[in-house]
Length: 154
Image 1 (tube, helix red, strand yellow):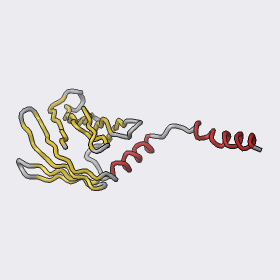
Image 2: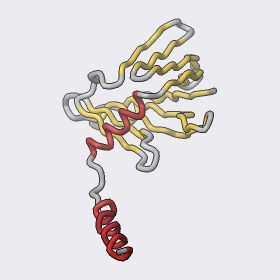
Image 3: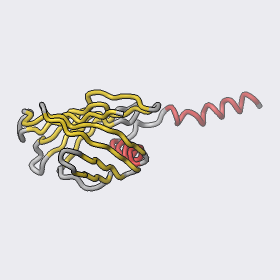
Image 4: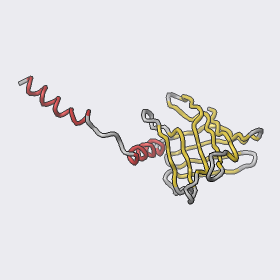
């Protein structure tokens, strides 16, 4: 009787070991779900050469708000809203689901913007972006017309 149970249990577990890898859509849906549940309140800055613009980043579920100073301005994004890009390629860390790189393409299929994580930091047991490089590219080339850094401090 015990042998039958062990064999039956082993056979039932086999499909779990033979599962197919997740599709790109499943990975993206998982990343969006993780991102949409976050509650974040951090300080940071945008830096382009000698110009530094401080900001506060507040995320409450799918709503992300960047409040800038000098000059005062607020940018509000909702995860899942439409983009200014015709196509977006994402690089996602398999283990954590963290977004590591994003490339945005214009309506002529030309790469125009690249976002890439440079470093991360652990805050209260969770990993967060520390620095991201944002490059505005000359369409049709890989030449950066402008480069800025988004930096998060606790």
